[in-house]
Picture 1 (cartoon, rainbow, N blue to C red):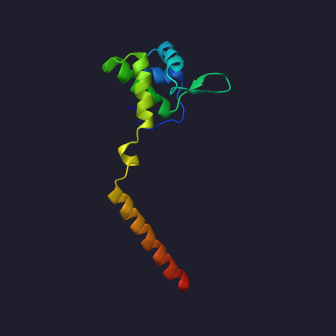
Picture 2: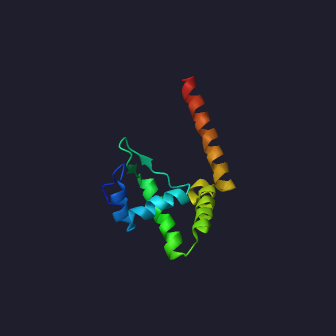
Length: 115
């Protein structure tokens, strides 16, 4: 997706080349998608982070590949951001195991502090 040596910030021209979208499309999407808000440098030029480029690619996929409307894509991105990912959800078994590990570590620490 992005070049292997990832930069901290990308210009609108670079993002345009990476995403194969015209700069005016990127500027328009900024006004339509609350999740797309690149910062601006002292000269007033947009500076996109890797996260911004990933959002743009998500928007492009929703609009061009999945044929969402802009309103539908905004809602989809909003729903996606509020849903926990697989990494964020733990089963009750995993939570119990972590609590048990925590208690065992506390016991070990108490034993070490006694000596």
